[in-house]
Image (cartoon, rainbow over all chains, first blue to last red; front, side, top):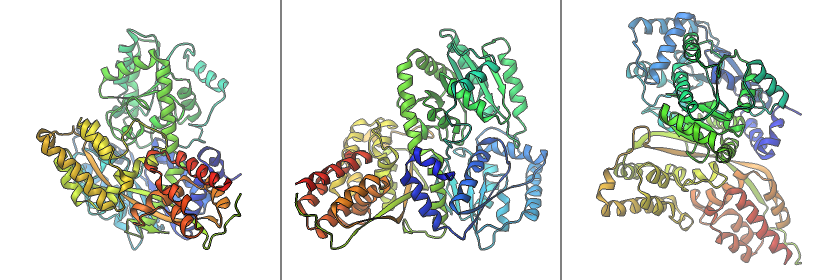
Length: 403
Length: 223
């Protein structure tokens, strides 16, 4: 069985048939994805799964990664935080670093795509190399309230693209180019999301000293201040006063995120006094992340800003009750009190976690509704379809297009 | 059982896939909502009144159009939300008429509830106007009689049923759905065509609509 056909039992044969119909019409077009890291973070994860599927469907797809040193990634991390609205001191020299690195990538990178698909701000300058091909800028960042200086700087590049893509309606900007809403997705067959045998789950819990017989509250995410891991510990401590539970904070680092280590150390320090808090740095260990999600009683995503929050989709896909912040793409995944609980503060998160721990039937119902919503809207097959439609839209400006 | 009638023209199943386009325009209160709605293309009104059908193929507590949902859950105007949610979409044969109805419903409400016009949404809870871009393409399926037709309805993608029932009628301005039209004109079965036309498809989930169509057709085949 081909890889794409393995999705048919999950999403239905008709969905796979549609993908083939679309792919046939893209034969002969070369698609080139470009981002800034091959491992770590949601973008690399999606591309890792998606590129082989496109190739199997017969859509010629390649994925390239730009080069950048430590200094460049420190600047892009600052830009990332500033776009999320966090206060950052941006120096004139930061723009110089960005431009110099961008220029050397322009000089070195072989642009061969009929459609060039650039992900996030790091490689944005490559558009200066645009010829008569089509260019898409895919923004995975929450830009609902961006730092104006950084946004203005990026704006001059963005307008050179043919289309931009955002993950949530509130990220839309006033732009002279077309903008589309395409949510990211999870892959139900990946190591991170496939069903696991109970003994694998048990072994992971044993390895990290987590008690399988007591409730487990988990946040899976990079060690990043915008994911508010310290806030999660505070919420847990608040819950623990009334309800016994353990907390797991687990995640890897991304190659383009230099802040990860210091945030991890802060969490370790804050957790030191409570042996029920497990702060786990798991370098790209998808099976272990998967096992921790399956083993959890409640999953939390208390981000301050969030491009989309794929960990929410991962948790809901496993039928888990989720408590998550009302930010970024999270409300697209959770209808409050129907497919999870939304919160806006440490206290709100704590209250919601207590509600779910104390009412397992309610928690189960939320998880079940959430799983159905993910099945319907956030699996990789929908994402493949949207990207192919996006490619067609580059050649047709009408609202109704006959293919 | 009557003899199976062969169609004068086969029914070719098409499917419709869509992309959501962002317009970058947003409203914070009812007045802005109406003002912007007036300037929006039909593809935007279509998006906000039909998105739920494909995104929520199970029954969710959300009202069945984005305007009703926002007015209720963000502005807290439940009475207006109910009026908007209960607009009988199936009565309208053009999006322009539907757009006018939504605008007049909100305007009437504002006239008798002056404060409602200036009640603001919180930051990040504004109404974001979007558009729906449709991509229509033929599937591998075609039917020449009702037995084949019912058989295909069982396996064709849900997007295809959506296209022939909703999009063909309202967005492409055909005034009837494609199934009723074919059954009447190519099979000459007016009774069955009218039964399908009488359904209010907006009150079904798409999978329930599929089951209902199959049931009605199979029942008619048994007679």
